Image (tube, rainbow over all chains, first blue to last red; front, side, top):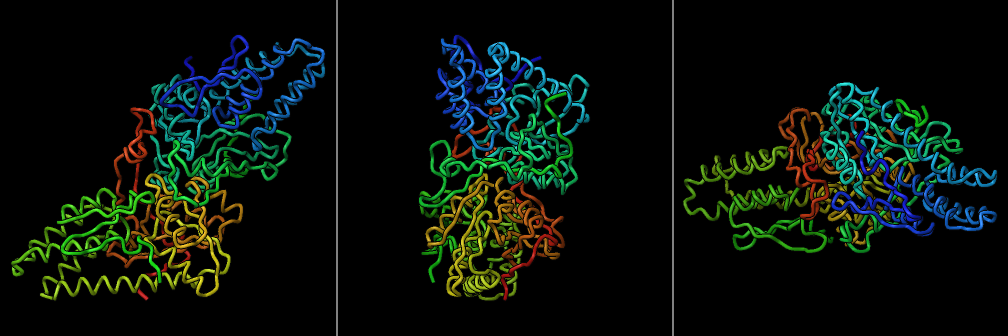
Length: 311
Length: 311
């Protein structure tokens, strides 16, 4: 099985974390180094990595800080400080699930290194099974619309379909302002040999109305107890349009957080410059304001089926 | 009354047509020259001008070719050739209404120069009245979402509101891939002193769900007999979302063409490079396909009210 570099975008060697710089793709496939939790959190804040990359980065960061600290008896307050910084990095993302889990292991004196590495190994296998489960929902010749990037799962889903002799194709929204759809999803699908067509975010209704799309599959960044999902801005309106055109809408879900409903998830508002500039070039007139909510909430009622991580 | 440069983006002096280069805005306010109908049509094909600019350019092109031709007796076949080239420039746009009108004048030996200049003067006054009519639908403190660019009408609407002591603000979708919303609408509104906030095309549902938008007002490039409207790609999905959120959706309409229904309007598919490149810089991986329908059809049933040009 071949994996997209986005499937496991964080590496850990000799107490250095290597972070695939997703902002440099598709032009350059390069890794940034993080040698401490501050550098790791800066990479998260600057969106150098996202989605599953953030989960891996959080876990490797704990591993790094644990290894660096020689006095294992006093490790709890050290890692609690790390946890606090991680939790504050991006408000919409449920980092607390991970940081609480790790601090729980430390509090109970469980073997931290083994637990972290075991968790990551399990995560890898669960994600492969999740892609397999998604592929079962797809028919031969289906055209799948996806938004943003689901970290290597789309090529895995397509590969899994191919094993069942189902040939599928993709539409990727470009996903402004960071263009993860155009830069990452299209890149990894093309690289894996699957047909993919980029559309602008404003073309979804038109392409759906032309009958070109059979299914929508997106990821989810934060699943609430009631099935609502926070995901990359733009997901919500695609779900509303899918409903209108009677197109099934599937979400590849992380484990649910303790948050009851999507209404309780805080939406991160990012700096307007990220919207008003493109690769450092200003695209809007001086003095004009921008508004950039980085996520939106898709209510459970619009989701045809959740494809959960745990099987 | 102050006008946006986009309200009347074509000038005509000494048998030269000056075309406001809308692709260079907001950085540069420059005019291209056209000395014959071929240059005028190239400017239309390359989207140097659009919307009402195209109407003005068509009329001035006939004026130019009429003046250049000394043998007024043989003018009909000359202008018929001009009409044919114009009609073929962009398939979705109803240039035939204009070219048929002009050829009709020529066939009936009406004074062409006076007719063209009279038509343009009437158009100007009608557009001012259209903006006034739109302003009557708006309440104090309304926030208006608009898409693409309606050639100077939004600042006029805001000004007309201000006269009635109504203070309004705007959200402009950036309108990928040409960014007319970010580059033109935000620019002309800011220039005229009205508050405007840019959002990406994928943020519409989120911003509507936050209760930040009271009305949607867009233009229309081609009105069919049944009230369906062809407009810049993205209009249709905004109309669907407005319906979902119970937000009134208004269209500033041109005169209806002879086409019965939106289904009969041909959608122009533009080169994928225009989507996959940004200012000459490739944003998508090599070999990946793009799909760029330049317009979509908003059905009459989603339109709360048409604001017609004729009053």
